[in-house]
Image (tube, rainbow, N blue to C red; front, side, top):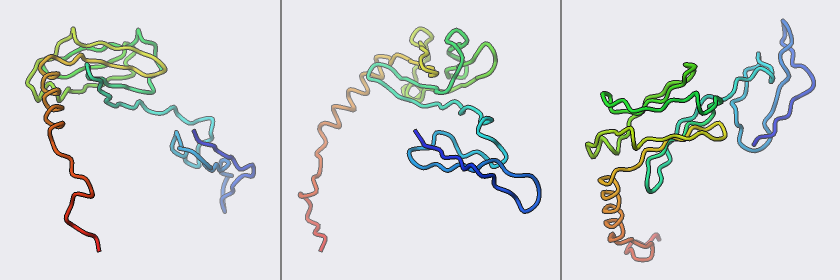
Length: 161
């Protein structure tokens, strides 16, 4: 959340029409980039969609934030030929293709039945249930990491004097 303060006096150029009122961001994280001087605050466009991955223990999960359309507008499917997941809207306002590198690493095919999606708070949540092969590989990796000895800062021979 950011606090924006708009200056009441108009900024003027040496020649030409006055500029829009200037705004300063006083605290917090700015949610939008500062607008160019030619734009007014009422004409700022909404933020672009943000694509991020957030896995859980049982599924791969991707989130696309700032999508304003209702759930029935979205279509999420698997493109087996290109080995990717495709997100599109029926109103043709959004289209995204992305691969699942974990499945590529294990050379596993994509399956439509393992794919699902939900929509809440302007966020499309796409989930792909992890196959057994991936779950086994991840558990083996966790076991291997548990066996690794952790070096503590007090165990070293190096002195910093």
